[in-house]
Length: 131
Image 1 (tube, rainbow, N blue to C red):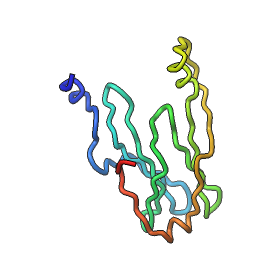
Image 2: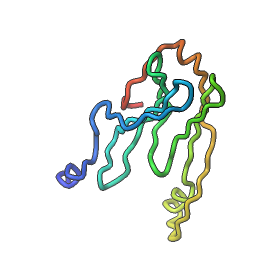
Image 3: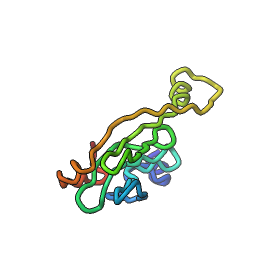
Image 4: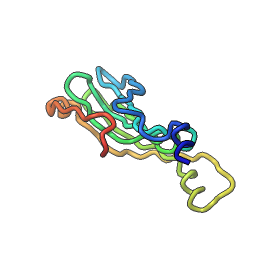
């Protein structure tokens, strides 16, 4: 079994495995690092960060696609809101052993960050560090 899992790429992806960077607003980015490789057996886990690439990188959560997705939105140039989008029917299917599966998402505000405060703290969270 261990050989099978190793052959599927299951486990640690290595340190600082940068996956993507997308622009959120005025020099603020969302960075994703793949920190757990599911291979053929499960999904990958992505650690998600807000960053300006100069003065801060703030860990905002783990994205376990496609069941929990982190959505970041700029409320204005000074605030960033982080939402969690969850496929509620997926969890219901597992809990109740439902045969018919339909996607139904629930989105809720998780956190809000003041960009000026993050810049003043001048702190860089390490990618893929256990939280």
